[in-house]
Image (cartoon, rainbow, N blue to C red; front, side, top):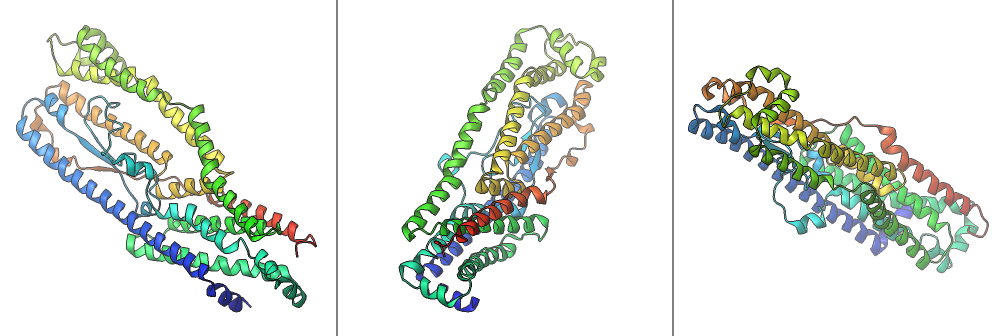
Length: 449
C-alpha cells in the first residue's frame, strides 16, 4: 500500500519539484556555511600571525619602557567556532568572534568587530537553519493542503470510502509517504553536510537532526489539522499559508518588538559616553583622588604609593581603570537587560515552533545571544587577567626583556551549555500531539469522512 501511494505521489510534478527545490536550497546553504567557516578560520590564522608579528615588532622598538609597550600590545581571545555553526550561523556574522584587547580601558574595546556590508547583515545568511525553519514548511504545505479536498473534488473519495474499512488510515498513510520524502531530503542534506563541513558526529549533531525532524512533524501535524476542516483546496492552501506567515514572520516580529520596547538599551550609548568622560576628565584633576580610587579597587597595589612625577604609568593605567569602573553601573545594566531579553525571548519561544527551533539550533551551534554574552564575560575575565599580570611589572618599572613574550599566543574560549533534551524536544512534541489531536477530533465527525 505504501509503495503504491509513494508511486502515485512521486508521479506529480509538484512532488519532485518541491524536493528539488529543497535539495538545491539546502546544498547552497551548506556551501554558504562552509564559506563562513573558512572565513572564520582565515581570520583566526591571520589574527594569530598578526599577534605574533605585532608583539615581535613592538618589543623590538620599545626595549625599556614596559608601560609604553603595553599601551600598544594586543592579546587575542577567540570564540572558537564549531563546524556545526555552519548549519546555523545565528549572530556569529554580527558579533565579534575574536577579541584583540590591550590592557587599557575595556569598555572602549569590548564591542569592536569586523566591518561588514550592512545590506548583507540586514538580509542575513542563507544557512541550513533558515532553509529548515522557513522553506521546508512551504514545501510541506504544497504537498498536504489538498490531500482530502482533491479526492473529493475529483469524486474519488466516495469510491475509496466504500472500498476501505478505514478511509482515515489511508489518508494518514498519504501523510506518512510525504513525511518520508521530506525527512529523506533533510537526512540526505545532513549526510552531505558531514563530509563537506567536516562535522563531528556527536550529541550536538544528533540534537540538530532531531529538532529539525520534530519541527517537520509539527508542520505535518498542523497540515493534518487543516485538512480535517474538510474545506476546499483553495481554503486549505490559504489556511496553511496564513499559519506559515503568522508563525514564522508576524508572531516573531511582534514578540521581538514587544521585547525591544520592554527592555530598551540606552545604556549602550551611556556606557560609551560614561567611559570616555570618566577617563578624559582625569587629565584635568589631581592624581591623588584617581590613585585612591584605584587602590580601593586593587588594594594589593597600594604599596606603590603616590608618585610625584607629572606623568607616570601608575596614574595613567589608574585613569584607564577608572574609565571602566565609573561606567560599570551602565555596563551592568546593559548586560542585565540583554540577559532579560534572552530569557523572555526563550520563554516566548516555547509557544512559537519556529522561534523555538531557532533558539535550539543556535544553542547547539553556539551562535545565539546567550553564547555571545558568555563570550563577553570571558573576554572581561581575560582582560582582567592580563591587567593583573602586567600591572605589577609596569609599576615596578621592570624591563621589557624580563618577560617571555613568546608565551602570549591566541587563547580560546569554547564553553557550551549542556543539552537539555526535554527543553529542546518537549515543546515540539507537544505541538505535534496537540495539532494531531485536533485533527483526529475533526475526523471523527461523520461529515468529514
